[in-house]
Image (tube, rainbow, N blue to C red; front, side):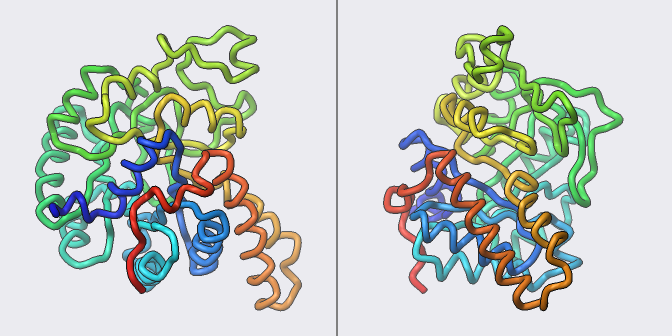
Length: 309
């Protein structure tokens, strides 16, 4: 079996594409998050991707190994992904030394040709070590924790030509720019490039012939998995619509973490262990809800075998 057949992220997302459901790729900041997310996955019999930002390499390096241990011991398929890795030397170090199944090689803060060249070189390095690679086309505006944003670059939507160029660079997962934002959307909410009428937007109905996300999925044509970033403020109907047009890896951060944050704020005076335990329960229930929304609940048995503890 080749490394691709053994790679957890690729197994999980290939099954999702075949089964036409999405998989939550959730950012973790602490062990409580890991505990809640894996518990939700096991409760719902859902595959899961645990994501960490590069800041964890400096701030909380044991968290990386905790996520990997949780993935190995889970009774459902779980992989570990490094999100928005933007430093070439750091990416090579991670590929050589740390237990990630996949890395987002995020060179989107460079102009397109340099983005492609750096992505290709780092993809070759990661593939040589059995690690799948995600890349971002265009410029998804906004920023996230510790990530270099593209605020000085004009937001550019992904085209079919972009898709072919990144496929030629050999990436396994592709995150397009379709009007999505890193961070919060503001009062108007998400405004994806869907070419909808007012009535269609209110009902979250996509015109598949002119929906940019669907066009990107068709251009990929099974040659790489479709990823969606910037899901803060998404209603369930929009999540389902995105999955329906081909999204398999559904990145989430505040979408699932906000109720946990709110619980901490409201209960800050409780004993610490009680606060932690209740927070895990709140976050577990929230994750279960969104696993139902994207359709991954009950799909663990189709998503590749979990590791033997």
